[in-house]
Image 1: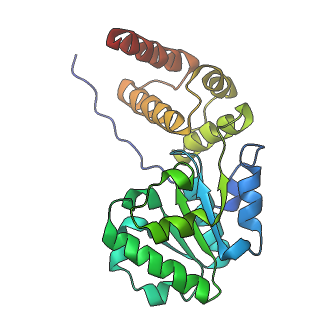
Image 2: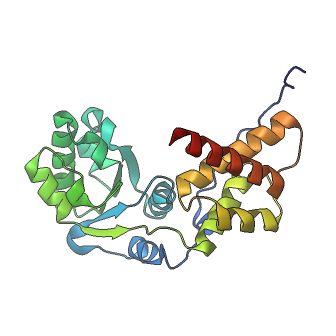
Length: 229
């Protein structure tokens, strides 16, 4: 039988403060981003992919009027204009070997702090492991206060899974979310992939998203892992 056509609705990512679930694993980061000042005027926020860095960054930007810029785009930015207000730079480790972007980041760092504006920087892992090739920039980044988003506890992982479904306009049964929390890999990126696959297969096969479907996908993943070893 030919595979049925499916039409996937675009998901809408909710990034307001009310959409961010606070738990012990991220409470310190939330508290620091809510603070009126940071030591030296700068803060590094780190965490794995899908941990909520971008969401928190957008919450902070909305509340402070900050501009958000990707580290890889810094070389083409108007640094004087950026440094006139709060600024957030995403994914600094991605420019570890890009000298042009690092030079721009170094100047933006100095201009922003000289103007008395807060600077938020994000990336995976702790700053000492970012290995920026410009020593002056690496030392300034390491001199910032650092807060990490910790691996999710059950409560947070369940909330993230529920939000991922909500962003896709889906309303799964609570027993499915509890099942996923108990059995899936405890990573935010794994949660995002699982929700995406469940949504796609449910649309393709014209069926509901259930525990049985989730169990089937996990069994397929286990079989692939076994075959690869």
